[in-house]
Image (cartoon, rainbow, N blue to C red; front, side, top):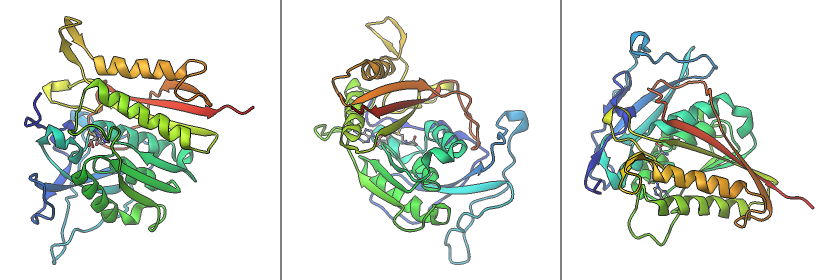
Length: 306
Ligand SMILES: C[S@@+](CC[C@H](N)C(=O)[O-])C[C@H]1O[C@@H](n2cnc3c(N)ncnc32)[C@H](O)[C@@H]1O
């Protein structure tokens, strides 16, 4: 895959989602922006997502007489998040799209609001900030980070679009540039190096944190169903010469990192004990095609007290 190749997230293929194309060219990026209306159930009643029983979405993204967006409103059954994003992008710009893993992590957050109450949360590789906004509905403060300037601009715009949903309208969020590997000149995706940089960033955050426990949620997608190119930085199924078979070396590399962290006396964070597990059976609040390749992991780091 070359950096110039165009990629498209599964999420944007969903015909039930309503979106409008933005007229104005308000940033320097080549991709055109759209605003999509993501509906979600605030209760734990599962959304129907099968073709025969698809969620009818007659709501459209609307603009008022002045051409301004009509902001999210709460109705009886659904809440709505408006997300400004690009559709297809070059590989370097995938952070400008919405990816299924962020919807599954958002589902988890909505079912586990109490975990996030009174917490300061940092999202790594946040893209256009969907998860950050969802957690911003419940947490004390959300720090939304990415290395891509144009994605950060979209995140910032999305926080403004969804101000009404946030737990506190002011000082509840920050959008910041954070590159897991500042030494990389170009954004390299799907290499094992990026997995190393991702975990090194997590370990750094854990080590400098003064809290007794840090919980890390890792949401990822392992492959590309329906031949649509879908990805997160740390995993992808590939045919590899070494394995002479379909393999996902980056995913394997991720599991090695997790195993390493969970060994006793882990050399990377000697003051902490780690445990890790996969989280299954997550209620689906958002309407999207949740593939079997989506996974959510929790990595818990507890400070050793003498
Ligand atoms: C597939 S996108 C996922 C975006 C968002 N989390 C979602 O699921 O919609 C991967 C994200 O990781 C970010 N990323 C890649 N390499 C990074 C790095 N070295 N440091 C920080 N963010 C990085 C990209 O800019 C992009 O926003």
